[in-house]
Length: 103
Image 1 (cartoon, rainbow, N blue to C red):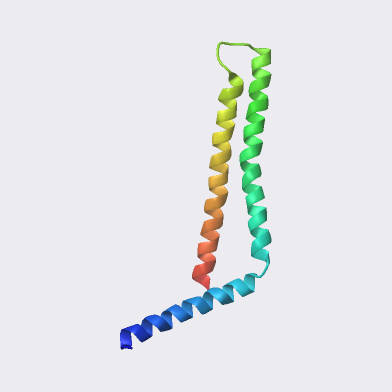
Image 2 (cartoon, rainbow, N blue to C red):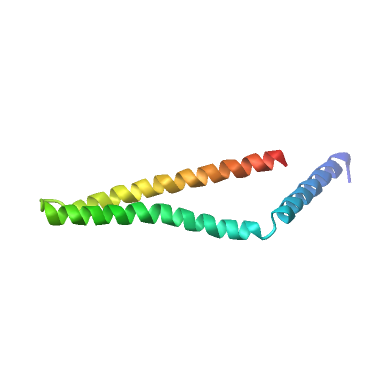
């Protein structure tokens, strides 16, 4: 085994040890945190979509027209929800990367 192989093996072992220590520190919280985050993301998409559909349905019943406000505002609500979910995921990713740098 040459010097380069030993240093790369040493680095790999150090990286694995650091990952194990971080995982041990987090414990079972990461599982519950992950489930909570999935719920948060799901609701952040669902609520604007359902509210958009309800508002569109109300407008269609009050002011009938040639095109569907229900579908239009539902799609707008879905887009808003997806942007909202993207925001939460980006924020969480940045926090995880910052934590990883601190370690």
